[in-house]
Image (cartoon, rainbow, N blue to C red; front, top):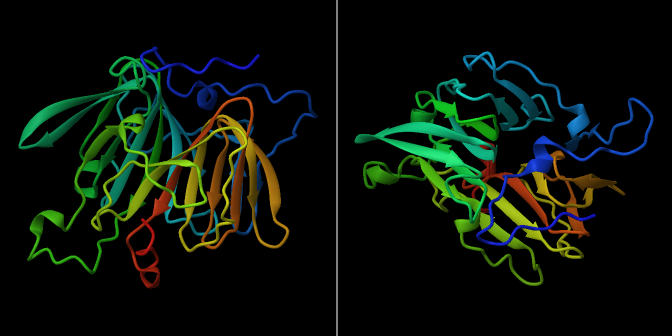
Length: 304
């Protein structure tokens, strides 16, 4: 039976199918939908390998879903399990960090003129929405610690920050580097994806040149699909949060993947890509996209 989709105002429990995926059904032992190709990779829940994370509480464990070893990715994408009371470790020097609360909650001490406590929780802090997130620029990601409040799972993107050569800090000192940012997915405005696309699009970070990547959230109702067979120099790291559908990836005839909540995808630059949503409920996926950097500098500038 299809699960009932919560209405606004009802308590929600984050994205349970990411952390507790549905059984994959009958199949031979060793069967997997995971695949690593020259221009893309698919990692499904049964292929996740959990390991300790340097400088993190030893009780924490992470499963990397994308990294530079994977066809030259600029970033890492990692699911992290944090037991109650566990603390995060620092990012490497010069590395920026984005986290999405998938399940549970965390507290982060942010220092900016004064110390303030931001509590992130997919359940308790905002029962009308879920999908709470925090972005930490490189000068903060190495010093701000996050503490789990209850059993918690987060999705974490990290990347070595690339300053823009086009910014003039001597003229606009406040805009030469990104600022920390906190929000909820469902609080972000929906954007026009451009006709004939009908997908619901949200961008979670400010559309400012100081930011060298953005995080998109795409919602599709059953039967909706991308009209553009995309092929561009941006790269993506994607995690399915809700629903299921068909993703067409790769060169030539490509490969067709049945993806569902909990599946992760890496798409290299110029990987052909197309998606169509299947019943019974909406698809929601979260997507990393490098932005505002000239492709001659190993990034993007035109796409935001």
